Each structure stands twice: as structure tokens, then as C-alpha cells.
Image 1 (tube, rainbow, N blue to C red):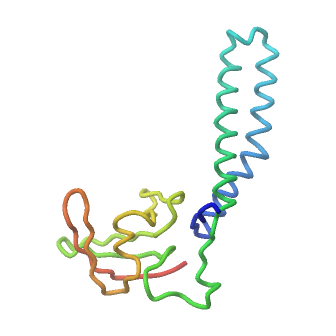
Image 2 (cartoon, one colour):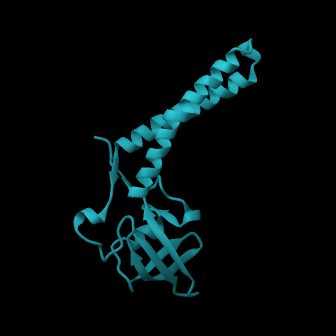
Image 3 (cartoon, one colour):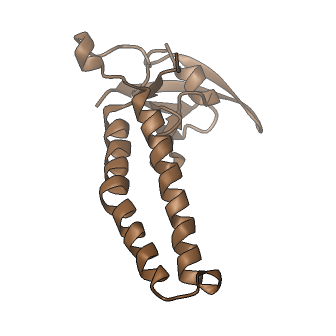
Length: 160
């Protein structure tokens, strides 16, 4: 049996929307683009045709990948379990304060496919997420990073 892939509700919805767009809009459009390029004659020297076929390959690969991932998705939603956890778990927004500098950062722990450091969404498999899991507000954690160990204290925990 294939391994389940954890998702937040929002992450699952985002990838589902992307899959729908690829199937209902992008795929039909690229098929039309290929037909239009074919009508221009000799395919061996037709850059439009080659580009459209390459794009079609990318779209089909992405559709297959998303179909696979979403078929194995496990949406984690703590509302279904009757309450908000008091410990750091998947989907949590966690604010930490660097004990040395006092600098605060807020991260959301998400699945590998949802992670985006620019949006402060860190992968469940990242070192900081691993250190945070199971901890509570006011707990101290030690994160081993390439530049050395960093000590943090958890200052806030919320689920949205």
C-alpha cells in the first residue's frame, strides 16, 4: 500500500485546484496549440510545435504527479478530533524566539509538498519542525543547523 501524504486543508485545496485547472484549462489549450502549430506545415522545423509538445509533456507529467499525490492524501484537521491540541502538531502556527538574539519567527508546520519558506511554511521533515513537534508554549528547543545549534523558546501556538 502506498504511503499516505499529510496535507493541511488549505494545501489539499490548492493542489486540487491546480489539478482541476490543468485538466480543464491547460490540457485542452495545449492540444489546440499543437493543432494550430501542425497547420503551419513541416513539423521538423516548426519551433511552435516543438515548444507546444514540450509543454504538453510537462502538463501531463504534472497531472500524473498530482493525481498520485492527491490519491494518497491524508488531510489533517484537528477540528474533527474535538478540539485544538495544546502541543505542536502538524498544521500548527508556532512562534519561536531565538534565545540569543530575542528575534521572533512564526512558522507553520506543513507537508513536504506545501512547504514554502517565503510564506513561513516549513516541512514536517525539516530540522526545526522535528524539534518543535510535541512541544508546548514556553518549552525550549535546540535546532541543529549547518551554522551551529540555535536555542529557541516557543512563545505562541495556534491552529487556524
